[in-house]
Length: 150
Length: 183
Image 1 (spheres, rainbow over the protein chains, first blue to last red):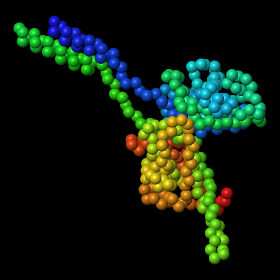
Image 2 (image 1 turned 120 degrees about the vertical axis):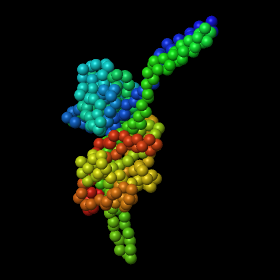
Image 3 (image 1 turned 45 degrees about the vertical axis):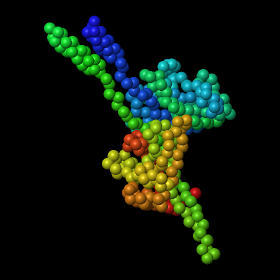
Image 4 (image 1 turned 90 degrees about the vertical axis):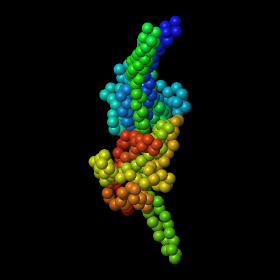
């Protein structure tokens, strides 16, 4: 009986130990920075720098709102041009890089496809995105521009 | 017979222990101390103007120096500050055999960093560093005085002292030093 008990214990241990998963890696994305906004040919041109070398990095989400507080609390990301929910605002031709890289994004409408309003100050930030983990970085610095349609 | 049974039980038990410990691949966790790169580095020339009155004679002195600005968002617990490097050409700046030169800490807080800083967790921070000929005499950093009309190239890296960890460099920038420029 004692022998059966001991053998049973080790059998259970053997099968149970194989269920222990390896250590899960920490998922992090370096935030894009130095975001600027300016009027350019009747559009808002955003420029920022990124240095995302993570293998699971897949693009950048651009967020907009009408005040800094609203941006932090309720800012909405622009949908990408292909209207794919699982992809970032900027994802085409964007992949992990080993050096600091400058990115540009032009805006001519709000995130919900309405016209930009002349005289309104629009606030923006950008976050790096991983489609694989559905994970976003901390936000870039916030910037803003007065829309003048010039 | 009893001894044989005991031996068999011991052997079986040992076999299970060995199999249990080796059957599952326990992955090694690779510890990587990466740091977010500072970005948006820019440089501009500025000056300080001092007025000295000697024997009723007023003399005005202009000291031109560089100001470097960049954004950083380092929340890593092992982050300790930033290191700024300079070179006389872009190719030298990107040369990993140390053609570039480190810039000495302007406030004398650190002998390894250009700018000591603490981790920030809430938002990106804009940093500025003033670099002048007056503070570039430390022999740890083999730097020579700025020369009029020469162009200098810079980049900055985040640094973690505890693990000797560096970020990738920021974007490079450059500026021409002028002794006769006035703001």
